[in-house]
Length: 461
Image 1: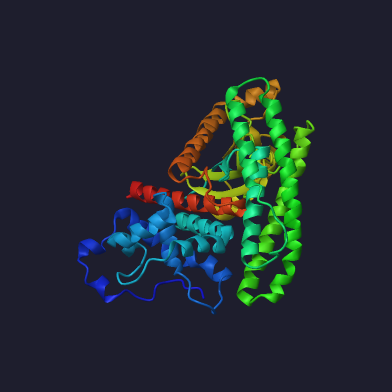
Image 2: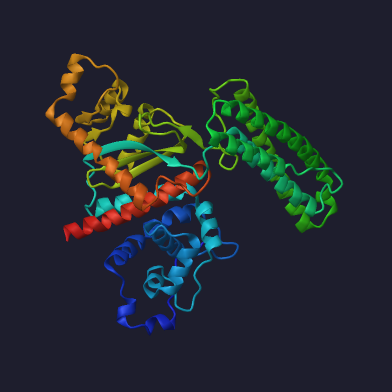
């Protein structure tokens, strides 16, 4: 059952001295912004059930997550710090005689509420900033960045090791629960560990035969992985009977184990197929799997000479002249920037409720199609530099003073992305999957916008 607010304070809260009941200026401003009834509407629309156990009050959850991303705390550290601080308890609306929500409860709620709620919350926050005249939205700048997935640098032999290790662990869990006990399964993880050790020693030697030695060990691990997959398939088939024969609780655990085993076998087969292609000399593999733990992550090269290939997701951010982020998107893979401007512009106009007079982007968005689209939308000053070779007329257009001035203003968005990456950890998601990266960026953007609104309020005062 969804709870929006904490019913009432305890008697002990009223006995506190005024110094303990007074929040800092930052926390008081955030508390006032999050107390708006519109902040509860996204939760009320999607989670309006009145059955089941009461959830953590939404007002507590929002404030706890703000503190987590504001100070880059883990769930356990967050709960411990809030439990020890009178001011943080008061900010989170947690009574003195009440317990702070458990870390696992918070982590589950983050996934349960999903990314759509965060997009709606950011829209509510931006409209509140517009009502307070903190947001004008006369200028718009758009840029993209990369959200790195929580994975290691992928190698063929490393991916095979991950797949075999998880399959072995899942099979052992099934057999311990009483499923397919008489079906033979050999643990080959030690063999793969020895092969990984040989690869590490070979690469440290830096000889010309290193590549051949690595490919030989990779082929060896590939053969072992085929054997493990065949045996795990028999385990999966023979464990089907145990679901009906054992009690309900054990049967549920076996069903869950079989589901996990099926998913990991599918991913391991993909890794085996692309490893075979690599051993045959095929280097370009479309939709190459880079992690069995985060299958949706993709290799992304940002097109800069100094930038290395990163593994994760592409994020787009729209920003106004007040440095408030009105809209953000997370995309799988590395789609071209030129095709992302239209939907991002429409989302920005929907949030701000006005068409900007100025729009500035980098060369990735520059195209005649995008320029014509912005002209149709009523943008008077369009600063979109074209990539590649340009005509003399186009070069003269881009050398105009107003064009270069807007490009200098556009470059300031790099500072916003850098600040978000350093202070709010935008660049390194701790949640897996496309939805996880969207949730991680959403909380980071929400926390950043709250801090920016505090700065704007203080400047106006």
